[in-house]
Image (cartoon, rainbow, N blue to C red):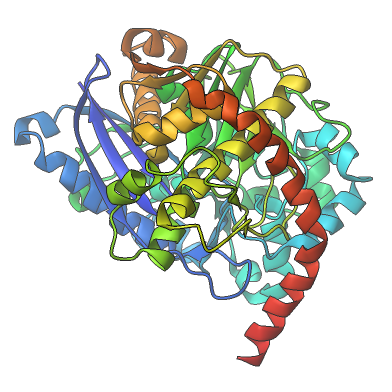
Length: 522
């Protein structure tokens, strides 16, 4: 049997085929653009995800024989969390055979919903009470604020909506015609009851959300649909293949790295930077002094017969996304390998140049949708190698702040694993180990979320009895990167970095006002 994992990411969709030993047989990827029509806005056309899914599967299938394609026995999905897709009645009636998205999908890093977040917190007695109710603060990237924004600002769109779902769930709808989500993605809406692992009736009443608008909630390894004949013709996947609920990219990435028990943390260097820890119970009071910096959600290890565990994450909204932005804007003719080679020519600390990676607002280590990025300390002595290295260091410094906050709140760890596209860089892995002053382990398979989705599919299909059993049989460590002599140099750099955001934060509202005025005038 082959297992297909599909990862609907922010910049591309990936498809991975693995066997029952977890060995990657083939993979494919197809990209799409990000639309930012106004300051703080971030959205995409859901149809682009479906097109990219078909292309990615076709690429993966091109790497195996026709006879092996018939061996695909289960599909798991993962992807960017919190995005809002609204479908109309005609789409539901067509069972996935037409696009039908009523508007562009508002994404996880969108910042337009600040007033809706205030509305939510006020309705529930403040941010701390909200976190104690659902494990998360009302941050602009979450799904409920987007719903309230759409209802208030685009009432025609909202009025025509008959189903609301997240990005990976839209792709599964196209594959199966079924409307469903998993407990992990559902926890990122602000509407899930973490104990019952189902929609919260009190929250739905408070905000006037019709339960019929929301998908049914399933555990991650639970089968929620089967590939339709139409989707089989579109993708080449055999008709009738079961599709499990899957989970968000953070949870699936943890499964793909083997972080499925307490004591290990996973740092993901993806478009965003995430610190993830597996927990036995939801941790609502993890950070009562600044509620909202951490997210308590459901882990991706539940089955149709067994409820799953929980997790806590701290998410910095821009990590590898900063490197992509820098390449596109400053060095469009360079490839990533060349840029990393330049960075290797810079000393630690980039000759006193600090980079704040808050290019799309921030969640953690400080929940601030108005946060902006910055280079601090530029002089005529700085060259491209210092600029590039400062970006890599700025992301690692921010992740170190999150790790320290999490440890200070009682989430202990003995192992640090790293994944995501940025983890393919040996230099970035070394900088991370030096900044953390701790060994950093890299799993052999570097397609964490899509592999995690495939493992969930295998559990749903009966290949393994649990996600932890699947990880024990399949996950191997390829490298342990220990701190170098440079780790000592990062002590004073961390102290300087800790002062940077508090010093610049008072400027952010003024800068945002200038930005909005400029857009209005143009």
